[in-house]
Length: 60
Image (cartoon, rainbow, N blue to C red; front, side, top):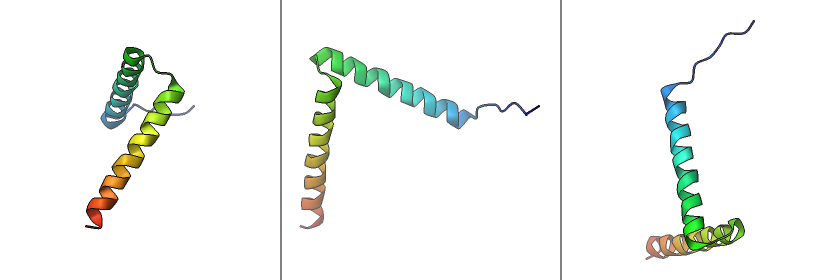
Protein backbone atom coordinates (compact mmCIF):
# COMPACT_ATOMS: atom_id res chain seq x y z
CA UNK A 1 0.00 0.00 0.00
CA UNK A 2 1.34 3.36 -0.98
CA UNK A 3 1.42 6.45 1.11
CA UNK A 4 -1.18 9.06 0.43
CA UNK A 5 0.36 12.38 -0.44
CA UNK A 6 -1.20 15.66 0.42
CA UNK A 7 -1.08 18.54 -2.00
CA UNK A 8 1.21 21.28 -0.86
CA UNK A 9 0.05 24.86 -0.49
CA UNK A 10 2.16 25.80 -3.49
CA UNK A 11 0.43 23.21 -5.68
CA UNK A 12 -3.00 24.42 -4.57
CA UNK A 13 -2.02 28.02 -5.32
CA UNK A 14 -0.75 27.02 -8.75
CA UNK A 15 -4.00 25.22 -9.53
CA UNK A 16 -6.08 28.19 -8.44
CA UNK A 17 -4.03 30.59 -10.59
CA UNK A 18 -4.35 28.23 -13.54
CA UNK A 19 -8.11 27.94 -13.03
CA UNK A 20 -8.45 31.73 -12.77
CA UNK A 21 -6.45 32.23 -15.98
CA UNK A 22 -8.50 29.67 -17.90
CA UNK A 23 -11.81 31.24 -16.89
CA UNK A 24 -10.47 34.74 -17.62
CA UNK A 25 -9.39 33.77 -21.15
CA UNK A 26 -12.70 32.00 -21.75
CA UNK A 27 -14.61 35.14 -20.76
CA UNK A 28 -12.48 37.30 -23.06
CA UNK A 29 -13.05 34.89 -25.96
CA UNK A 30 -16.80 34.90 -25.38
CA UNK A 31 -17.00 38.68 -24.95
CA UNK A 32 -15.35 39.31 -28.32
CA UNK A 33 -16.75 36.25 -30.07
CA UNK A 34 -13.34 34.79 -30.92
CA UNK A 35 -12.50 31.18 -31.65
CA UNK A 36 -9.55 29.38 -30.08
CA UNK A 37 -7.72 29.65 -33.41
CA UNK A 38 -8.23 33.39 -33.54
CA UNK A 39 -6.96 33.71 -29.96
CA UNK A 40 -3.83 31.76 -30.91
CA UNK A 41 -3.10 34.17 -33.76
CA UNK A 42 -3.69 37.17 -31.52
CA UNK A 43 -1.28 35.89 -28.90
CA UNK A 44 1.27 35.05 -31.59
CA UNK A 45 1.04 38.61 -32.94
CA UNK A 46 1.27 40.02 -29.44
CA UNK A 47 4.44 38.01 -28.86
CA UNK A 48 5.97 39.32 -32.07
CA UNK A 49 5.19 42.94 -31.16
CA UNK A 50 6.54 42.59 -27.61
CA UNK A 51 9.65 40.81 -28.91
CA UNK A 52 10.26 43.55 -31.47
CA UNK A 53 9.87 46.30 -28.88
CA UNK A 54 12.21 44.56 -26.43
CA UNK A 55 14.81 43.98 -29.16
CA UNK A 56 14.51 47.61 -30.24
CA UNK A 57 15.01 48.83 -26.68
CA UNK A 58 17.91 46.45 -26.03
CA UNK A 59 19.81 47.52 -29.14
CA UNK A 60 19.35 51.21 -28.67
